[in-house]
Length: 270
Image (cartoon, rainbow, N blue to C red):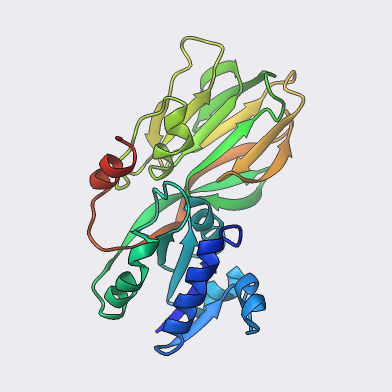
């Protein structure tokens, strides 16, 4: 089997585990290690795009941020090992990493597909979102003003710190802290959650993924950013045309059988 290997280079134990996993897997197949790991080991390194092209399964070692960084470029199944904090999207804790790899080698796993969001700004496609897209003010305590459309029909106009458009996967992340509902990941819908809206009627919406969500900034919103999965903020203005809908691409995760509801109980209800 061909493996990709990506890790969080800011976590010391993630680097140590990545080394151990590389040495274990290179005896059982080809391993395409991310360039930062390869440089430290003195081996050939690969970009995320190259890893996605070559690997059959991609291993991430870190937390949810490492997974989201990988999923910007990777559409192969992700086997996520938690060496970070909560690691809600990860499948296994680092102390069980080697037993998890043995299950993979024995074929004792399934692949779960989850929806992503397609993001268009002025007809330019940005990276797809696995968790959420936010449009927000970059300045603390400064309000922005916007209109929200569903398939070109206006549903709300309000002032707020921003707006979150989340996948079912992202419904347990930033959108949850903003008062949004938890969606089962098999639901084909997205959450629209205002961030600290200055209007009582501005409440979260759940709409089908096949709908187009349009965001239009009002003229008095002079400085705003669009952020995808917490990374790479890009400036947007009242002239920007922002459209978000379900993507044809999927996030794919290696799973051993724990249900979504088990994960919620274990990691969110405590």
